[in-house]
Amino acid sequence: MMYQNKHTIELHDIVAKWRSNTPQSNRSMKNHRPSKKSKFKQGYYDISESLKYSSDESCIYRSSLEYKIMLWLETNPNIVAWVSEPFSVPYKLNDKQKNYNIDFICLFRDGRIWFIEGKPYGQTLPYSYGWDMNKAKWNAAIEWCSMQQENVQFQIITERFNFYV
Image (cartoon, rainbow, N blue to C red; front, side):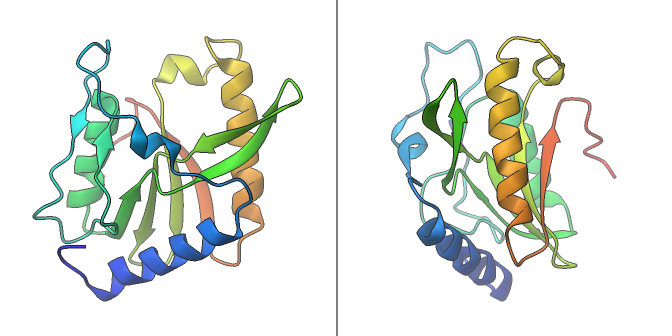
């Protein structure tokens, strides 16, 4: 981490603990580089001046919504630390074991921790494209959050989220 403060170190330590305690957790998404051929805006978020980013690893956005979430995480005064794609949570879909890569984790000034999934609103509606997979991933994340000692909540942020509050 280029800039370390007590909050980024705290979140880094929490994530390291979770990563070590989560079976089949892997870092596969960090190996998927941004694609110029994608229909979504992708790239590397510049963390060189970040006072809140809590990892030494690169920070990749895979859509314009994820980029907007990163800007919000970095500029919101109530958020003291954040990280992107820190680890995955196992889930089952059609009797197959899979891994759900968490988009973001953030630590609020009051101690709350959010697992954040950035998803277009249309893909959060029942029976929309990818609904069965999304529902399985989100249920696994909600269950995982409920088992943690820390105050962890799962949040889905869409383009309808009020980033200015």
